[in-house]
Length: 111
Image (cartoon, rainbow, N blue to C red; front, side):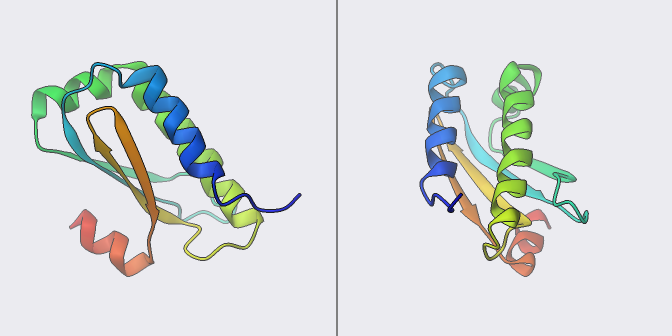
């Protein structure tokens, strides 16, 4: 099986269509893995609007996003892609975009 560079964004778009139709807030979810099997270990939610963030955190969106990020971390590592252990998902209302980051970039965003 070959690596599909559109897989990440396609899955995020599907999740956004399913869960973010009425979302009005914006923010970032910074995530990383420190484990040997490249499973999701840490996710930091940074949103401008605390009420909107709380709504997202209590919804199915949080669980689905965490499961998806875990799968994407594993997928990327299995295919030997760069920066396979950390990234950021930007949420802007009902759209999401994922950027894979170096360890240093991810640490700067978390601080």
